[in-house]
Every structure is written in C-alpha cells, then in structure tokens.
Image (cartoon, rainbow, N blue to C red; front, side):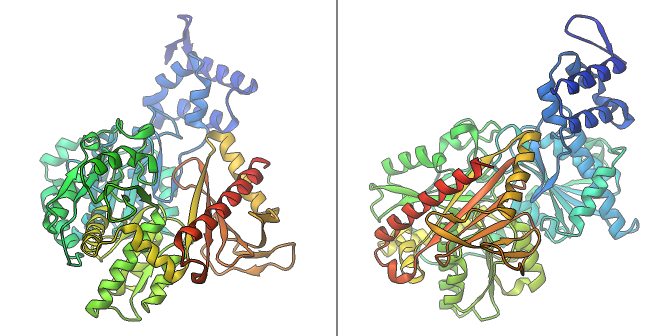
Length: 613
C-alpha cells in the first residue's frame, strides 16, 4: 500500500511509520498517539482507514493525528461521546460507533444466551451523521442475531428509553451527543430496564468493545426488507404520548408559551403532548425550529439550555408578544430550560431559572398536588444526586417523603434507584443539569413531560397572579435561600487529561485551607471513600458511591464546593453551593445579594487555586 506525500513522491506504510517515529522524537506526536496510530496502520481490522492515515502523515498533520489518536475514546456517564472525524481511536466515526454496537451485542448475547429472543431499540437525533450511525448500529445488531425496533425520523432520548421498555428489548442505542457542540456525536447505551448501563454491565461492555476485532454487519435496507428491522415510530409515539399524558396534574390551562427545540428533536414529542394536555396557546420559536446539526441560530452553535444566552432572543420575542414563559429543550430533548418574567407582568424584567431552581419548583408543585390528592405516603420518595441542590431534600422532608441523594452524577444512577427501590413509590427524579423525570414509563430524564408540568404550574400561577420566580421565592422563605453556581474549565487533549488528573489529585492531597473567607473543614473523597479532616488527622470512612468526585465542606453549614471531571466532555466541573437559614431569607432580594457576594468570592478563590496547579 502506498500514498502520495505533498511533494508528489510515493509514501509506503514503512515510510509512514518512519516519519511518525521522527515526529514523536521531535515532540509533535505523543507516545500514546504513536501506539494507537501504529495499530491502525498495521492491524487488519483497521485496513479501511490505512490510506487516509498515511496521507495525513504524508501531509504532516501531526496535531490532528495526535488529537484523534492520543487515547481510546472512553465510555463516560452516558456512553461514548466525542468529536467526529473520519478515523481515529479518539474520534466518533464508523469504526468507533461500529465497535461500540458490536461490543454491546456481544456482551448482551453472552448474558442472555444464544437461544434468547434478542432485541434492540434504536433512535437518533438531528446531529450530523446520526441517521447514518443509527443504521450502522442496526446492521451490527441484526448481524448479531437481534431484532431491531427502529424509531425512524428524529426522536427524543426519553422516547428511546420508553421504547426499550415498551418493546421488552434486551438493550437500546440512542445516537446523540445531547447538548455538545455540532462537531460531536455519540452513542448512549441502554440496558433492558430502559436506563443507561450500570455496573457491572458498563465495564463489561467496555471490555467487549476494546476486544472487538471484526465488525459484522448487514445492509440496513436488506435487514428492513427481511423484517429484521421493524420501523415502530408511530406505535411508540402513540404509546409514549399516552404514558406521558398520564403524568398530568390538572388545573388551569390559560398560559401563553414560547417553545424552542434549539434545532433538535423536541418539538416532535413536546408540541403534541402540550396540545393533548389542553394548552392551546403554544408557539414554536421560528429561528430555532429547523432540525439542524449545525444549530445555526444558537449562540456559539451550542444548544444547551443550561446556557442563559440561548434564551436572549426568545425572551426578547416573548416580551414583545405577550408570552408568559419560554421553554427550551436540548437537541435530544432530555433536558429543559425555562425563562419567565420576574413578576406577573410579562412586559417587565425576565430571567432564566437554573437547573437546580427548576428542580425545586417542579418538586414543590408535584408534591403539593399529590398531597392535596391524598396520594403521598412516607414510603414515597424522590431521587437526586450529590451535586444537585440540597433544597430538594428539604422540600421532600416538608412533605414527609424520602429523598435519596447519595448518588454520583448521571441520570443512570437515579434510574438505578427507581429499579432498586421500586417504581410504584417513585415520585420525582432531578439533577442539576436540567434533567427531570416523573412517572414509571421511562428510566431517563424527559424534557417533554417536564415541559407539560411546567406549563401546568405556570398556568396555575397565572391564575393566582404569581410568577415562577415569586413561587421560587416562597420556597426559599420556607427552606432558606440557596444559590448554586457551576464553573467549567476546559482541558482538551492529552495535556488536558494530564492536567485534569493532577488537579483532582491535588484537591485530594493538598486542598485549599479556606475558600471565600470560610475555612475548609473536611474533604469528602469519593474515589477512596474517605473523609479527610482539615489540617490532617485520621481519615474517616465515607458512606458513598465510588467515583472521581471531591467535595470540600466549609465551616458555614450547607456551604461546600464539589469538583469532578466531566464524563462527557474534556472539562473539569466545579460546583459552588451556598445557602442561608430561613430566618435570614425572608427578604429574598437581600439574601440573594449576600449569597451572590459569597459565590463571587468562592469562584475567585477556586479559580485562583486551580490556576496554580
């Protein structure tokens, strides 16, 4: 095999390897990248990509080669996610998607036996190549002996979770990179429960993926013609709508809503559900309506409802046209963001709500309605995570229901608790990154149903002459003002990964003595399940899940900082948590000012400490 370099001469694989080694000696390619490139050049399973890799070497595209080969793209909190590129072990492409499906198929078949009735549900979103990757996954699963139930056209992640359960599937695959940039794509892998895979299955699937040699697949259209792929979009749409509508809580329906799918799939499920629930005055925000993997009219082309900037233009339009609320869902419609006027005057000032605040108002609304209906008991429970506001537990306690919060980041852990403790008494699940679930029909966060309940709450508040922000303020007065803030520090590539590991190690071994003028009293290390007292002393056992998470508790009760590397993006996340007791929160505006100042000081100190590492 030969390729042509930029001088017109012929470059053989041996010559390419020689140039690669020389580039490594010059420090232009990292050692892990060199090893992975060599595998892709020499091993038969990567033969389809050899010419293109040789051409990159001939063109001396060392930075690109290092980027796409410095590691093997991992399974994170929600599956395998990353930037798309035509080849590379650290990129999303036909090989990494195909081997992900093959590894899943191999493991499920091992677990259930070759005589089992194997099936897999597959769906995809509006991202570039999502349909192509979905068809590839379907072909792999069929070749492995699975019947595939395929959601054709763009559909939401919660609909895939629902489909796995509805069709009694062995597993499921959702092709989406959620709220990541347009450059990215991914596969989310689901177990038969409809939840994303949990231990020990996750590590076992990863092992099968890493062992994957040949990818066996059949043509999608052939499988479709033979009945091995079944298009079930209409069936699942109807059944999902029935299950989602069953979560409605009644009340007024007079509210004017502006909805943005942020160029994703959300409108396909959300608009029919809102209409069925009696909301007649709902408009899709036209600049965000087009399904597009480029996310063209969103700031920075990142369709993330956590980002306040995505609401700027919709709020402008909503204020000018008499809307009561703006809702926005991310590209695969499992997360939702909200903006609303500060008072009942829609012409006045507006603001967004954070994921923690949305979780709090939804929980309060659901529990209050359930209590009024007499359908709550001490056996009922809500579920959240270690980096979600402590306000969730306080609201649950007020209503006499349980709250499980000792969980790592990722909705799969919430889903796991629902299956562990039983879905019959499950009421509400929430995480700080704008994910919410009500009901037993799915095991992943669901933005369309959250939209429906937010509309019901907004309609009730409108009838009462109150805004969503005023409703939240009343919650703060009862339980104390809570203020949370998230800092994202991007650390890309091999150097970024090394810095990430160093940063986490330093927070464990040499944490700051104080932050924001408050002493650090102890460090909760979830990787080693230890509580480390400030200033040394004997470590204590930490009752918690094992994960790469550190929490620094501060001397002011209820104030703490959590640090963790993202499981889906090349970044470290710092979560700032501050609160005041109810007695100091009756003047909500004053309490907000106090905690805003405290947060500013904490953010300053966290960033300053991290910059020195």
